[in-house]
Length: 230
Image 1: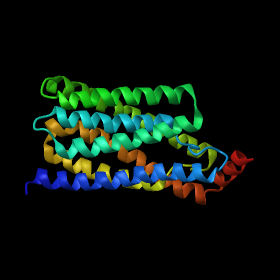
Image 2: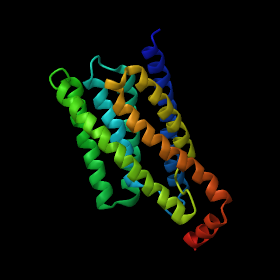
Image 3: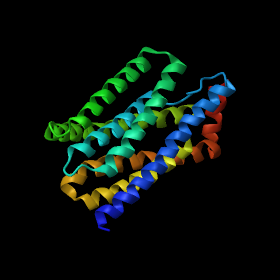
Image 4: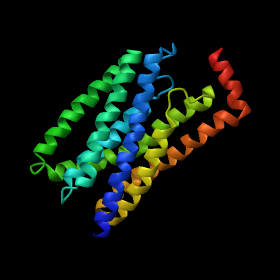
């Protein structure tokens, strides 16, 4: 087994582990909906952050079938991840019924249809797809930082994590580490966009995981939580 195949397999395993984390977030929403918590099944979930996460998975999906050779390690796990995060965006729309959430769901559906069309006609648009997906990945790297900043700010302001699921951050962080290793095995020419996004994502997950401890131990968080719930 080559280094590329080894790290590709490892990355795929961790992607599926991260998918369990995303699924855990979906289940948290469904559980809260079933329990009728009264403050929203998607409380404190940042639509900004999950929109960026959707676009990140989606851009990797396009990138995977746009490079030569076709990268099965990237394409199929990211397609599943795109669909799962799409479910979260749909649940946010069901819970909030805002114009912003409706627009996000619409954009997600249209982009998914275009992405699937590109998958089936990839041989025709390989160069264009790679160019577009690389730009998207770089933009998404910036948006991930901005989107998670918004999520982090919500947690710090309220002193609570709300419907944010810790497992999702933990599992996605493991995926980010394996993605960096896989990108290195691909070579800098093909792998650098993946490294940029994975490093950015990993840093934000470290902060989110720290905040789960902060809300339990910090007197400031406890005081803000009381004010938020009053």
